[in-house]
Structure formats: structure tokens, C-alpha cells
Image (cartoon, rainbow, N blue to C red; front, side, top):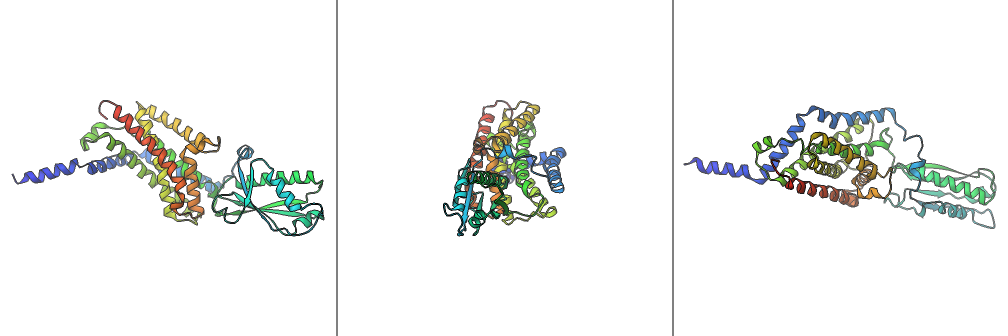
Length: 379
């Protein structure tokens, strides 16, 4: 008789929702930890990719023309030229007018706009510009570009070069009276600087999507029921939580490796950079879990992963199609990591890049639960 209260408490503890949830998370992590192939994909392959890029100091590509076409270029202007030259017109002002006429160019004041992401760079016309042009001496245009934005230098250089060509034509200058030079801002001297954010965000998203696409269709319901009889909402929640935790471990590896081996020192807070990875992890895992609820076999789960990754990368990266990428999480994740790592933005200021990822993941979270709830049989 005396053992009855103890037994009752033990059963109540076992049936407690939080305990069931934690048991499910532990079960998910244990199943992945036992899969050596999956662990290799999660931790070893991304690190090898980082080493490959860092060791070879990979170039951006053969041509950026297709990437620059149609992209907005908001450029700041600082006109320090007070010199005298042509009596008919102000040369520096005329040059800036021509620059403003270039397709997709918007000129604005510089001050702190570069830090606040209002512009991608700014141009300075130093004193003596008009005098040099008028006397056919070399006049220099110096532009400072945001190196966090990969295309900033090429985009500004293309616009400035086009403006110089048009300027020479309109004012009948035959010599190269105007030339330009560039200075990068926020750059970190590391061979993986340009590719770090892309590797980090794409890898975390892709691995979370890949693993989660097998999470439901490849599950063992008998093992789970033996551990703890659970509700379907708890099952979905535990899977998303477990795989998100796993992706956060992967994110630590992807952040620390370039810091140790490639001198990638962040001006920003390490923990803010790492914590921000939770949002792209959550988005990728939630989408993968939803696709897994639709799959009937593991092969279908793998096929859904390929479909999901192509959609997220082709439509959501902004590299191939512009505009529609605002409906996907990858661009927001890349922007947030860049701002946190290289511009030292606090987490509170990154909210515009956080909520789209949270909404994207939550939509698939709810959809996965609805599909699982509609399924019949042992889940």
C-alpha cells in the first residue's frame, strides 16, 4: 500500500507533457547521432567546403554582367570640389548629374548612410576636380563601397565608368580626363570573407531541410510509442526543436573554423552572429518537416529535399530572380549575418531580418502539424 503514492507520482511524471516533449527531443538527437553518414554530411562536408574556398581564395566568377543588370544602386555623394575651371558650367555638378542619369542609380547624402544600409557606397569629388578637368589634367573620382555587399564594388564601378564615358562624349573630352579608384569599407582581411555568409546560411538551411525531410517518413513509431505515448503536436514540435538544436551546433563549427584557420575576425559580437543562425535553422527545418509529412517513402523525402532546396536557392537567394526573393528566408538570413558579424549591429536592430524568417518557418510548422493530424494509422 505504501508504494502506491510513489507509483502514482512516477506515472504522473512520465505522462507530463514537458517530460514527453524532452524525451522525444532526446530520441531525435540520438537517432541522428547514431547515423554516421548524416553526421559526416552535417559537420565534415561543410568544413571541407570552407577549407576549399579559403585555401584557394576562390574568385567570384568570370563575369558579373548578368548579376549587375537591373540592380538598384543607391550611391552617396560628397562634393568637396570648390575649384574654378570652365566658366560656362560647374564641371563637378555636371558629372554628378550624368551619374544620376545612369539606369537604376539613386544619389543621396553619405554621412552614416553606409552603416545604416541606406546606400551601398559613396563617391567623393575632392577639391580640384573641376580645375583638373578644365585644364586636361587627370581628375580622380574616389568611391568607397560596402564590402559586405558582394556586388557593391562592381556595381558602383560600372555606373561610374558609364558616367565617365557619357561625360566625355557630352563635353567633347577625348582624353581620359576622369578616372576612378575604389576603397573598401568593413572589409576583413580573410580569404573566406566574401564567401563566409553564403556558405554559413546556405549550409545551415540546406542541412536542416535535408535532415528534416527524412524526419517523419523515416521515423520508427514503435520506438517512439515505447518511449512515451505522445500527441501529434508534441511529435512535430520535438522534431523541429531537435533538428534546430543540431543545426545550431553545425553553425558553431562553421563560424569557429574560419576564425581559427583563416583569420576571419568579426568586428561584431560572436554570440549575436551565432544566435542569429537559429532563425534560418528554424525556417529550413520547419519546411523540411512539412515536406516529410507529405512523403510516403524515404526516396520521396529525398526528392522533396531536392525540390525544396532548388526553390529556396533559385527563387530565394536573389541571385537569379530579383523581387520574389523577399518571400523566402535566405536573403534575410544573409543580410542579418553580415550586419551582425561585420557591422556590429545589435540583435534588436536586426528585427526586420528576423520576423520574415520566423513567419516562413511558422507557416510550415503549422502546415506540418495539420498534415500529420490528418494522417491515419500509427504516426
